[in-house]
Length: 455
Image (tube, rainbow, N blue to C red; front, side, top):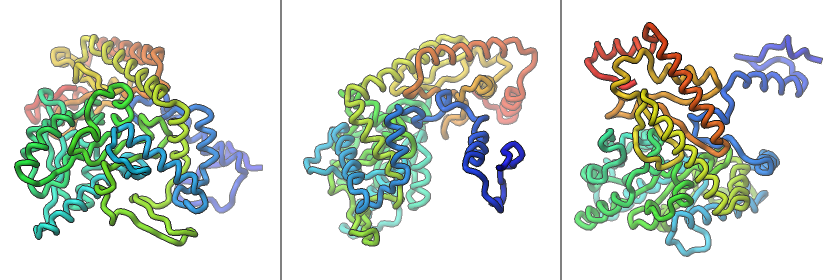
């Protein structure tokens, strides 16, 4: 028998001989011990809790490949049902039995598919009109998800960004329209902005765009990046118009492994109608026993997450999802209120649109503080919490903020523990006689560049 205590984990080369499975398991398991516990990771949007039956169901399907639809045809049926359910949550006008949509590894792939569809539609329109297809562009705010930068670089699309600020914390519809021209493939507002938790005003954008399209004849559509908000708004604010109830919303993407409540990785994209999904995005193969047609950037993908999503829809139902999301919202609002009352902090927004929010150092307090939010992040990490401090996107990159993301599994008791740890850390910081290394770094930058940084 191998003595696990004397065995070093391989770093560069595969070991020559194998070892007992229980020993290999323990070595890998031990490697994970220093990590933050998933429940205390308030940086991630990704689901860290599912019930025992969901976990059992997904574990039993860990060896199932979704793309093998001849071998596992019922998985494809359940995937189609999930797309139907999501499309109807978003008030699809499509009447066909199976709605136009696709599954992805995450919201990033779903965004990519929405972007590619918009690009191909634009190219087809240009060719039909005898125009050049050489300079496509996309309009969004500076608070975009990184996937849109990837999309624009990989598909050679110019990214035009509308700056956000404290005065204009979300995408300004008027400024977005000003950036549009005949080469704009789509405008991308975000529902549940990763940086701030706020929602772009899609309804106002739709109104402005309708006037612009009527005037120019460009027919520029909207793709809503609803990675977080797509599974929040239908349940807690169904009257809010952001989805297919709006004329120019032609596609929407979301993350099933965020507020869809499924373990990673899972994303969904739905089109307003099949006519908005270009035919050339569907690829067929016949080497799996039948002719299989698929829309996606990836081919093979796990089926377990699809089963987990369908299970959740059955398990929770609409009212169950509403209860889970409402609880997360209530806890987020509770934390938002408590942190906003601390003299050292200022909330970025007075409202909480989704179960996450950000704050920054109060400007007056900051003038004499000997610490920064990076110090607070480090202090909280010592207690197991992962609460990220980061700089805001371009146009606000001098501002440092902290963010809390509340997900299923976060309780009010945990929130009280977090708030207590924040208060205790601040008390210790206020006893400091000298500035921290983090603070000195920022003071040096302020002197060098003549800027006032909010820590």
